[in-house]
Length: 101
Image 1 (cartoon, helix red, strand yellow):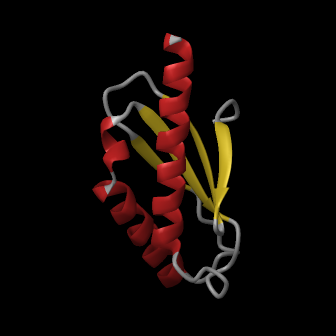
Image 2 (cartoon, one colour):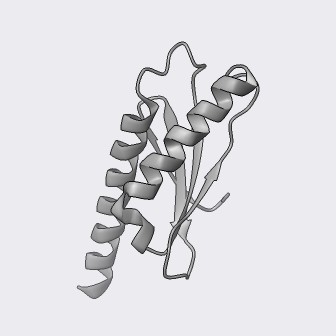
C-alpha cells in the first residue's frame, strides 16, 4: 500500500489502490495506542460493517483504514468510514472518466 492514494476522513486515514479483482478488500491497522483490546475490536467491527454495507464492495480496490486518534476522540468512526468510502468512490469515478476522455 506504499503506492496507494491517501485521504483523511474525520479521524481515519484511508489508503486505497486498485487491486485488479472484481471486489474490494479491507485492511485494518489499529494499534494499541487506540485503546484496550475491547475498544480496538469494537472499532474494527464498526469499520467492517460500514465497509460491508457500502457499494464500494463491487469495485476492485484495496482499502486500508488506520485510526488517527484514540478512542476518546473518535466520536463516530462508522460515519467517518462511510464518508471516506464515498470520497474514494468519487475519486475512482473521476479517474475512470479522465482515462476514457
